[in-house]
Image 1: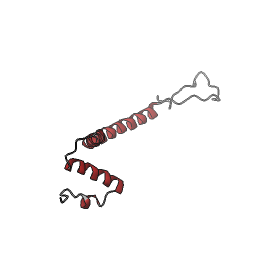
Image 2: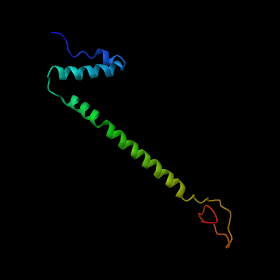
Image 3: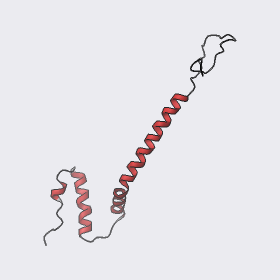
Length: 99
């Protein structure tokens, strides 16, 4: 019987290990074999890939934005060896005299 599901031309530009896994998946479907847990997991990951990438991108953006906000609003740590201050200009955690 001739193999009507030849995937070789499509898999030529893919890494050999990945191409072999794809070939095995195609053969599983072509032979009518039941799905096993590994095959089902691979298919679900493939279906959810775009949504997972979007979610990760959004989370990274939010985390980066929050880190920038924290860096801007963080109060500087007071120095232990800060010079003595007078009552007119007390030592405080301000960034400028306008805060």
